[in-house]
Image: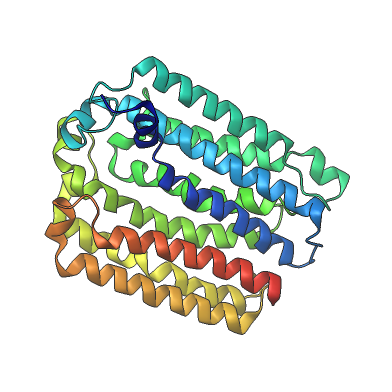
Length: 311
């Protein structure tokens, strides 16, 4: 039997914890540079660092609950994972999930923007945003709702916590979310993830079909599903220049316009990779487009943080 450290590493999938942690940190930095600009002193860094840890913990909870309720599907799609392989018990998996959810919510409660007014701090905005995200990760996998079974609800309950609410939560660590700016940015990235989320379903068609999950590839087939998601990978970022023109974004306008156009071009390249040979999506668990979609999010998050802080 594999050593315990290897088993837990494969169960927790630590490489998936970095993007949400980095995202929270970047969106908090972005918010601190948004108008009205706030100081980025030692006190301002603590909520951001706690938030990065919180985002990683919530992702551990999401990964765990998904593997618990996808056990029968994973016996077909991913039999080498610790649960279907019998290397880890359901009891331990439940313990990890509950502990990770509790840690994420506890951290979210203590996160407060350092330079906010007392009224903002009293609202505990980070906690309520994270609670909504945690509920979305749970109902995606768990009955009675298990939105993973439904074509569009599945993508929506992925896009909310991973695309939209992560941005709102990161923003709340630096200043109040009661402004249109973070919600506009969250809408752009939420729409991107709404389409990009389907890419993980192509390699899982057989198990999802048997498990009653009507994902887009199961429902329509590989090629039609690829054509549907392609526009979601590039078009949402064209809204960023509109945000500059409409005065919704307080960062440096020309630089944000270029960033939006660059992200759209990168997304178009990813769409090309998918549409060129869509059948490969259904046979390769790590299609090259998956790597590029993660990289696009990293570029976007770091780009916003840098432009807002230095602009």
